[in-house]
Length: 171
Image (cartoon, rainbow, N blue to C red):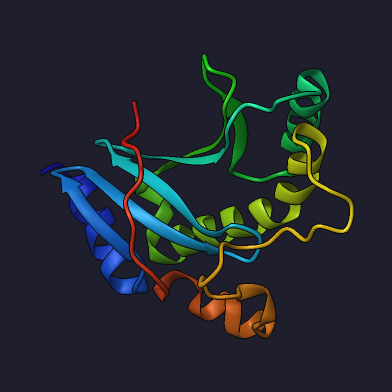
């Protein structure tokens, strides 16, 4: 295990995030979202960087250009995370941070930012790219914790300790 991976494991344990170790330097992290329920994050620790990738949404059925332009414009307003697309046109959110300056609080902040960015962007992009009936609400799947109903301070302090799942490994 690299020094970077050892540091990341200590930070994940310290902030109480719901993470599953997938390999010597790979984790699956579950991040709560008011709009999606849970966002799965694949994390990989290198010698000096932590790379994170979260699936945001499959490729849109319509308005492809508008969706990708909206994501690119959103990149201008976001810190640390950015939208990306794969060969299939699916939307991802990706981040990379230097482990030498990150720390537990920084990792906690990055995961919190992801939750915020997903909640800010998901419904608008979903409605633009897919047929969603007027009046149809968008929220987490049935049975998922409704993080939107929590007080913002409670949500911010407890978002990372909520549930369990797996995610795709980063490439």
